[in-house]
Structure formats: C-alpha cells, structure tokens
Length: 394
Image 1 (cartoon, rainbow, N blue to C red):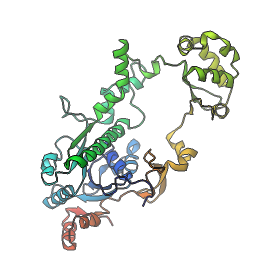
Image 2 (cartoon, rainbow, N blue to C red):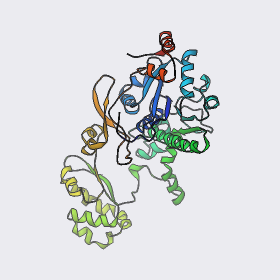
Image 3 (cartoon, one colour):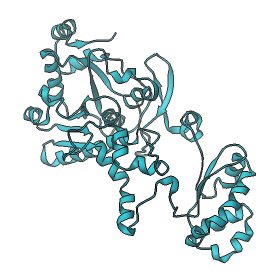
Image 4 (spheres, rainbow, N blue to C red):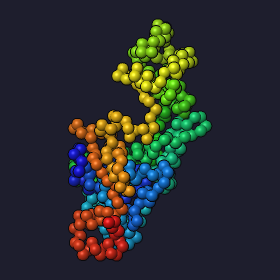
C-alpha cells in the first residue's frame, strides 16, 4: 500500500471504460485513494493488446485498480454490474452514447436505486448537434483548432501525446470532486459529463480571445509572432536547447551571462516590445553565439540564474531524469512481470506525493474479492465463475 495522501479513501468507484479518456479518470481517483473496480469484457479490455503508439495506454492509466471481467450480454453478468453500481459512489464510463443505456446502466435507472451515485460520462461532445458523433483525441484536435495551431501553416499536426484524452479525463475528475462536495450538502449524486471537443476548445480559447481582442487570427505556433524577442529553440554544437527571455530584467541578465555587453548598451533594445521589432537584428547574433557552445555549456551558464531554459527531452530520457527519479516515478510491475517506473499523479498534498508501488491488474484477477465485497457467498461466486458470466484469471 502507498503511504502517500489518500483523501478519497473509502470512495468506491466502478469503471466501464477503454482506451485513455475514461481510464484516466479512474487512475487519478485511484491515485488519490479511491477503491476503483474496473469492469472488463470477458478476455480483458482490448486496450491491453494495442500495438505501436497504443502500447502504453493500459500500463499508464490503469494502475491501482481491481479488475473483474463480466459478460454483460448475460443476465447474470449484468446483475453483477448492477450490484456494483448500487454499491458505488462514482461510476465512470466512456463508451459511445447510448451503449450503457441499452443495458439499463444509464444514470436515470441506476440513480433510482442509488440516489447518491455520481455518474461520470466521458464523451466526444457535450449535448448539441454533434453529440451522437464518434470522436477520438485526434478528431477533437483537428476540429477544435489545436492541430491547426500546432503544425506549420497548411499542415495541421496533432500534439505529440493524447493531451485531449488526458485533459478531458482531468475535467471529468474535477466534475466528480465537485459533485462529491455537493453531495455532502444535498445527499444526492448527479451526472457529470466531460468531452473531447469542448476540452480542445477550452485549450485553444486563448487564441479565440486573441482574435476577439485584436481582430486578427492567431497564426499557427511555428509561424507565430512571439510576445518575446527571444523565445526559441537554439542549436548548439550537439543538442538543441530552448531559451526564453520574457522580461526586461532577464534581458539584462542574459546579456551579462553571455557577454553581450554591446546589446545591453543599446538603449533601443531595453524594452521587450522594441526587441520583438528588432528580432531580425538580434537573433542571428544570438544563434551564432549559442551555436559555438555545447548544450551542457549553455545549461551550466543558465542553471540557477532564474532564466527559463530547457534541454529538448525525449520521453525515453525521462526515466533517467534526476528530478523525476527523486519523487516523480513510481515502481510498476507490467503484465509480463517486468519492473519499470511510470509517472505518478503530478500533485503534492500535505508534503507527500500520491502513488506507490503498483502492479497492473490482470484481467479478472480480482473477481472473487469484488464479488465477496458485494456480499455474494461462495456458492454464488462459484456458480458465476463456472457459468461464464464472470471470468477469473489465476
């Protein structure tokens, strides 16, 4: 068990999810101490078997959960699912609109027997003309303007991670926590819906606001006019590094660190907006200078100075990052028994980080424990297992 914070200890969550968005909700709730039971189909969730870019979905977003595999097409399996919901504080689902409704696992039906249930649906769209459409992270990024803003002009490019799935899951968690707080006052649960499309629009809202304020459309990020003169990736003799000079005081410090006394002496460059207008004059000089140094030499100059900078990291580099190694990665046992470390929830509460050593749930491995927790006796558990409504992994 983790010795990290567990503010949601005692909160029971049942999860009907797949892929990333729904499992993210359950992973965060589990990381904060909730008891999460993941309902999988017989044979386990197909997400477990994805290849390529999907190979990391299951291990990243399903730690800290119990697993039970149910045949929801059978009356017996569906009865177990309903009992799980009747005993839950929170239900999380992210299947296509209507999928759980057809099984009688919709909010209205379940809240009749469990009026305290908080029902979190993670969808492609909030109610409106698009709500029946199928959406994916990439669909939302394309529709919502994020891909347009990420790629060069005319070449929309999705972000390099499932940012909308994950952020949409985070908004779902925010809704669940707010609903739990309201339940303290009212005694009743409610339905919470988060979505991919509206999450994307919220993220690009700054560019919408820019258009509203200036009357000019925001240019894609690779073609943007930056708010700062120096806010770029610079090539060194080996590996690139990002440097940002975002205040006039930092400009003075930057010039001093790199021996650019003549640029600091130029009073026409003292104000940020003046430097932005003079970028064509400033940047070749700075690029040439940084290009004579190694990345390590640049970092040595900038570290502990208050200057914003970053080496250009790759995901595989992060396993060896000394800052993350101190607190930000937790031990995980993969399905094949190999040990690794994966990111914990990026929070600190009361001086402690959530998370701890975890193993991925094997499909249905917790069936007996979950069924016993519902008050089922041994005879009933054996009948469910032998009848195929519930599958057990040994």
